[in-house]
Image 1 (cartoon, rainbow over the protein chains, first blue to last red):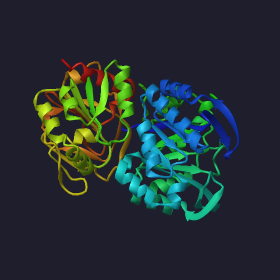
Image 2: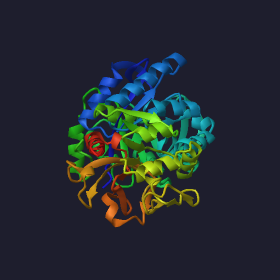
Image 3: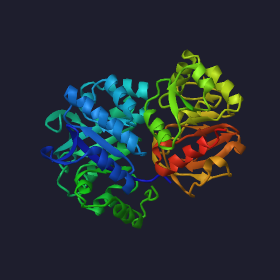
Image 4: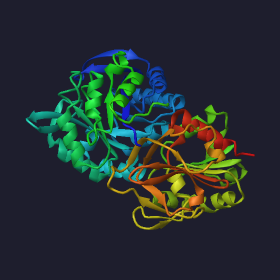
Length: 254
Length: 201
């Protein structure tokens, strides 16, 4: 049976992993290659690396890290941040990434998803949506690290993204991010109901119970988290045991 | 030396890293001579079926791959590379594959999410050296929207279940197909690549 996935997320700035709270007050945590190896050994199912700087020279540092990670670990990983063109996608895939996550650039140029899916395959194009609740049960898509409201409805955008060829959607709740009060259940569920591609929940994980809630049938296929893993608040093997105890199918023989 | 056919498919570096880790030398190539001189061939692949076949035709590689497979050189098709081994595909209209194996490629039924993405278990149908030392119900990493149907039952080594039976490992003598990504499937995947490497005489 297809297992639910646990995905540690690493924000990379100038070659180092950082974690922000509500995208601000970023502080340094660790070396990306070392932390990737650690998560791989602990049984993470995938990893995500976000390049949060992305000036041109730093871009090359980042590609170098992607290649080093690919050499060290034998699980899939996604790269996001600063992906604007087909060449950007080509470069990270050639460096050893399996998927690319597109966010602001896709909002500005939705056809980028279509062109990318056609050239590289639907399976490696991940649409990442930063959504903020603007009134009860209504979410808008925000871009530029959650700073700019696009006034586009998040659920409509998810459906459009699937049609354009995205193979997976990351649903990141700006409201829940960094708060550790749990994933945004309603938002994630609404988007999961609206599309027929895998859904990755993001933002808000603080306890094992939060993972249990969001990984129920017909909600999220995978759960992404950063600080609870980086700061050793939750260990991946213990989390997988807890999920298995709640009859959630997880991979436990890495 | 293992020739990895480099016809523009996405992430093939991970495959090369995995082979290096196992002590196998490999090179990325589209050169017919290099392919003929190799000890084994890996046909990777992501993207669309027809585009991949067009790229193989353009690079004039279809005949050399068929010849070498018919000459009993170990050939491993991974993901789309496995699908290309079959006769035809329904992806974006009917198109022809390499025809090294009998069967047809169809889209996964929409009763489940498509693509099939993530770790799923292998069920063994028959013993083969390719699954040597594999734990039962081992997890491997899948990411695909199409799968092989109407295949020769005798060539099915392992399957997985996703909206029905999906052939995961197939084998006809020296020709092997893996629908998942062994290079991304942790220690299980490395064992499978090692088993393929052991086929090199």
